[in-house]
Amino acid sequence: MSWGTDLWDQFENLDKHTQWGIDFLERYAKFVKERLEIEQVYAKQLRLVKKYCPKRSKEDEPRFTSCLSFYSILNELNDYAGQREVVAEEMGHKVYGELMRYSQDLKAERKHHLQEGRKAQQYLDQCWKHMDNSKKKFERECKEAEKSQMMYERLDNDINATKSEVEKAKSQLYLRQHMAEESKNEYAAQLQNFNGEQWKHFNVAIPQIFKNLQDMDERRTVKLGETYRSFAEVERRVIPIVSKCLEGMVTAAKNVDERKDSAIVVESFKSGFEPPVDFPFEDFSQNIQRTGSDSTIGTPKTEGGKPDPKTAISRTKNKLWLFGKKPKAPTLEDLSHLPPEQRRKKLQQRIDELNKELQKEMDQRDALNKMKDVYEKNPQMGDPGSLQPKISETICNMEKLRSEIHKNESWLAEVEGKHGSRSERRPSADVNHHAPQGRESPEGSYTDDHSQEHRSPPQPDPHEFDDEFDDDDPLPAIGHCKALYSFDGTNEGTLVMNENEVLYVIEEDKGDGWTRVRKQNGVEGYVPTSYVEITLEKNSKGAVTYI
Image (cartoon, rainbow, N blue to C red):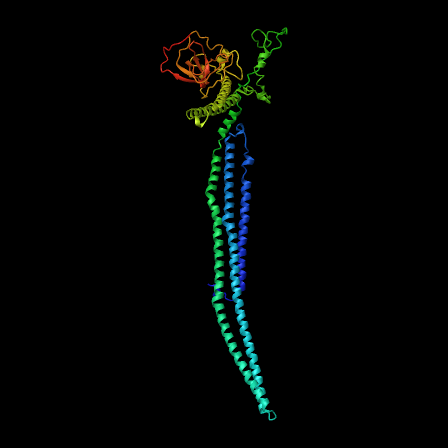
């Protein structure tokens, strides 16, 4: 069906209908805008990670499976919120924005077609007006000609009329008849022209204009259908990712393990103390003279006849907090204020962190040494001497870290019950500087604890090596080393060495950063492993030793 043929006379109604179509399209665009704003607000309100999962220190990181699963759900919800934002963005770009641009194009096109229709109607009205004016003129001229004919006939029949009057009336009749004939011809021409223009108007111009309006309206309808589909496709495209988010939430729920959480509670709060023993009976009636019969119930006696209540009470006085409020203890560097189990975990964690820092310093030292070698081979690239202060600083930092590691490892060994023999042999130990411990034998008893990969005692303490060289027989040399740097050896137990000096190696580094060496004159001591270049012999038996 065509608007041009079936609705040739409905210009005003088509004007109203096309305006309604554009209004409806803009109404739908307003709906999409409101929907995407709802999506934006919804996505913003769904981002609950910062509220329910704030940033925290490593110590406060959750370990319970229920907490970890909850945080996983929050992360999945955060991803889900991101998909809602994608929906809002796609709706704004592919639906709302497209509709508003298309609406402007429709308004301009509709205006153009209606202007064309109005121009055609105005031209037809103008043609009709010209035809109507010629028709009215022809009508007037005919009436005037009839009057002139009646006047001529009356004078021609009147015997009293003069000849001049008759001639005048006759000439007036001829004039009016001529004018009526001209008006008739003009009216016929205008009528013919109007009929032709009217045929063109209703059979060519108006059908074409209405057809253009019909095409415009149909394209508007198609566009609406496409945007309806796009509206749904935006949702459909995020469904796979949303499904993965929901699957992640389900997986997080399945990962909740009540037994594992219970074990974490035990691990977190286990003190390592033994439960308190029974309180002994304290008999205060020992000095009272007995007057009763032999059947009097006796009381148990301790050895020597007198119990020692202080000893009995002292066994449990430090554990009574287990049954009440735990007393506050000052925080100590060696964490001795903590229960054994908690202290062990904290020390282990501290040692791990120090080892990581030590590894970073070692990597930096190696990088600086490589750069120094490059500068030495290619002086134009830089001055090798400029790197020496940084290398020295790095080595100093490494020694400090090794000191801290060894100190914490000593405390850890003490907690684990492996430090007893070493503590008996050392009368004093500075809390900030420990020399290599566990050197009772060439094999090194220090390596009892294999839980740490890096055993790194730092700069020696003056009193640490009092018992290191009491053996009568010196240790055999197992290799030799060359000093890369000078070492002052100010602390007792360490050995002074000069750069490029060759020394005998009598004991390898046990992982603490110190190597035991002997000079040519037989003097022994420890030097930093990083200060020497070591070459071990394949067979050290029979090696020359010096006393």
